[in-house]
Image (cartoon, rainbow, N blue to C red; front, top):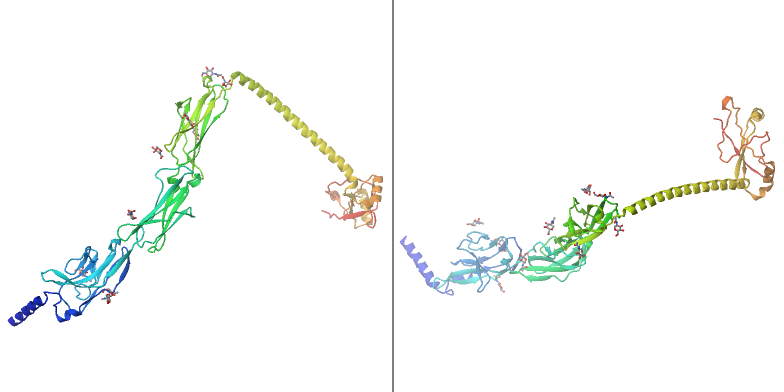
Amino acid sequence: MVLVMQELLLVCLMLLLLCRHSVCLGVGAQDFRLYQPQDKVLVAAGETLTLNCTASGMIIPGAVRWLKGWGSDKKTIYDQKEKPLPRVMRAVNESSTDFTIYIRNVQPEDIGTYYCVKYIKGGTDKEEVFQRGNGTEVSVQAKPSPPLVSGPEQRVTPGQSVPFTCTTGGFFPKEIGVNWFKNRNPMTAQQPQVTEWRVKTYNMSSTVMVTLQKEDVPSQLTCEVQHSTLLARLHGSFQLSRVLRVPPSVEVHAAPSPAEVNKTVTFTCLVKEFYPANVSVSWLENGIEIKVQNISQPGKLRSGLFKLRSQVEVQATEEKNGSTITCVVVHDAQAPANSSAFLWISNPSQGELSKESQMLKDDRLIYIVVGVVCTVLALLVAAILYLIRTKQIKGKSSPSARLHEPEKSSEATTQESDPNNLTYADLNFDKERKTIRRMVEMSQQSEYACIQTNRAPNGDDNLTYADLDMVHLSKAPKRPAPRPEEASSEYASVQITRK
Ligand SMILES: *[C@@H]1O[C@H](CO)[C@@H](O)[C@H](O)[C@H]1NC(C)=O
Ligand SMILES: *[C@@H]1O[C@H](CO)[C@@H](O)[C@H](O)[C@H]1NC(C)=O
Ligand SMILES: *[C@@H]1O[C@H](CO)[C@@H](O)[C@H](O)[C@H]1NC(C)=O
Ligand SMILES: *[C@@H]1O[C@H](CO)[C@@H](O)[C@H](O)[C@H]1NC(C)=O
Ligand SMILES: *[C@@H]1O[C@H](CO)[C@@H](O)[C@H](O)[C@H]1NC(C)=O
Ligand SMILES: *[C@@H]1O[C@H](CO)[C@@H](O)[C@H](O)[C@H]1NC(C)=O
Ligand SMILES: *[C@@H]1O[C@H](CO)[C@@H](O)[C@H](O)[C@H]1NC(C)=O
Ligand SMILES: *[C@@H]1O[C@H](CO)[C@@H](O)[C@H](O)[C@H]1NC(C)=O
Ligand SMILES: *[C@@H]1O[C@H](CO)[C@@H](O)[C@H](O)[C@H]1NC(C)=O
């Protein structure tokens, strides 16, 4: 037992003696190696970084640490002998060969070169660096923050050109793309400005100039950002209505004008097309404010703009003749806009006169109406006369149909003799070559219609109706049905079945 103790002590002494200088270590110490297999590591912010380090060769006493940087600004990240930092963790606890560590929730500031370092006790109890790994360069990919679009501080009126700026920050690597859209339409912007912010992260700022329009109330600006760390593009938007001010146009109308004495005159103030809705209307009578009973709420137009109508009623007393009624509109805390109308009172005598003239007018109106009616009637009569006349003229020349109707008395006889009694219709066509026939007809001065039923009609059923327009029926002594063969005339046989 004592022997063993002695031996140990000896070894310790020997070690102490040998290890005074780093060069005079044991024989096996020369084999010691620290391997950092990772040359460069790219990690996304928020993720866990693995820093590998393995030792080989003889196990030598002394701490292994992870350092960030090498130089005056080096920083201990992990110390085998101390409690690790909150985000740092050993991969294999208590291992004497695997010194791999994890760093959780990596931040852009973690960017740097990490060294796995083996220390040994130096001469004056101070630790000395025995060996270090080749180092692992860590770069942190950081996503850009959601883009923010900012516009002018104060509202601007249509026609003004103002800058809008899109900013995003904290991203790495530096390369970033920006696109601008106004209601999905691409816009041309200045080159984005990328500036370094903190260690190894960048901020970006991009500006577009926009000339605002009255129609821009529903418009939206969008800034679209693309970056290697992003799966989908990021968007920031800005509603142009936030910075738009469309001043109203103001109009005043009086009704009735002129007004009769002691009647009420309604003054209407039309406040048209403004934005935002913040508006106040007041009324002045010769510069003195009058009370308004009715303040209507602004109405929204389809364009997103607002309109408002305010009405005030004024008693048209004689002394108010020629008064100025003014509508004063204060929109969005701007300088007031105004519009005026006069209160005109018609002269009482003029009023009577006007009444007389009104009556006169009424009389005239009656005359006019009567005149018009008479004219219309006259025209109608003339038209009818003209029509009749033209018909008379045309009757002899224009195509017509004539029915040849045999006398009813003859029906019985005809029936017996001719069971296939037919009803004939004479069609007279306006053809020049039939002059002879026309002449004959004209000379005879008679027109016939021959309607005969198939069977003998019995009782009251013996009437056959032909509802043919422009057919003139006349009874005439029975005459033989015109023969179709006749060269100078054309016939149509109309057979009417019995009801
Ligand atoms: C360290 O880098 C050197 C060259 O830069 C190389 O020769 C050596 O093998 C590397 N060591 C390890 C442990 O990777
Ligand atoms: C790094 O170390 C971990 C834990 O020991 C191991 O799983 C992984 O394979 C190592 N990676 C490399 C590149 O050596
Ligand atoms: C290593 O040790 C720490 C504390 O001693 C413990 O919280 C952790 O779970 C251990 N890790 C492994 C992989 O055993
Ligand atoms: C850079 O961007 C970050 C994240 O968006 C922000 O917090 C920081 O204030 C910006 N810095 C500068 C100088 O713009
Ligand atoms: C109008 O009213 C005033 C007082 O109310 C009255 O004196 C005046 O006669 C009225 N005038 C007419 C034309 O009715
Ligand atoms: C106020 O206006 C509404 C409609 O705009 C109307 O119906 C109402 O009679 C008005 N009131 C007064 C006191 O003028
Ligand atoms: C309208 O503008 C006035 C003055 O700037 C302000 O006091 C008021 O709150 C605004 N009203 C609305 C509805 O915005
Ligand atoms: C109406 O507006 C004009 C300028 O357009 C201004 O000179 C005038 O003083 C205004 N009148 C009132 C009553 O506010
Ligand atoms: C009101 O004034 C107009 C214009 O000066 C004038 O023509 C009219 O006769 C006046 N009416 C009364 C009732 O005095």
